Length: 350
Image (cartoon, rainbow, N blue to C red; front, side):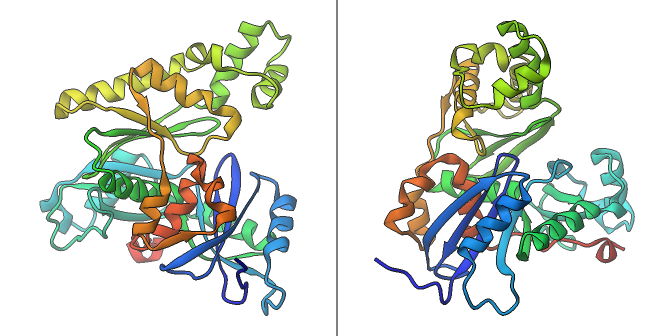
């Protein structure tokens, strides 16, 4: 079946490992995902070329208009319990962010949403204690927008990809009637974002100051390589199978994850039953298996077709197999979720 590019819309998911792009028949459901492409992360020339290849021929502005999800290193997506009675105090939220999140609120673009359903947190009614603080440094947002424009992308909206994925995963788990909470991990180069998610919402969150780069010294030691740079090149190449070394490589990360899960299980009486790593390239697929084995739980295999159908999103035959890979789930969530909170600018917070 041939699709017309005349009324196409575009979605981009720019994570630590790759930039994923989709061309769709419409900006809002019902829609058809007609084409998907990808290029390496942090490669402006490759992004510009990918944009050129999908750019409608008669674009008046010269830019590709797109909804974009991003994962800046200093992003904040944290679940916290608030004191609703204190929300009437003008400085309560700023004090909370300074003390609990350890940030300067004036320098961040922040949003506050319900931890259960992702709706805007109602500061007036304040009926829920548990909220998700979602944001990034204002200067990072400006830099991201400038980088996109330089590559020929005009971002119609910019979302934290982590928030879109959390919303998508809660929705997906509810649809599959999952019985046990799921550990969701975004494993970056120097840190890992860890969440416990169930059909009822985001149950827990924790940033961990260990990522893929922390595994490089172990590779160097175990393989007897002369320096860390050689170990790094090998680790990130696609030429060596690290499956057998997996338990050693994730040992430090496992201690932190076991601590987080143990605390959650004691607090709630619920056991975490599965894990999903949302962004990993195929060559790092051993990582999720090693974590699952170490925790004694299963890997969540996301099968998006049914979920997308419920969200009135259809797949062209040419893309159906590709988007089965878990790392595309962020891009799919960006399309499927349209109730992500309005973001507060520094001016609006005053």
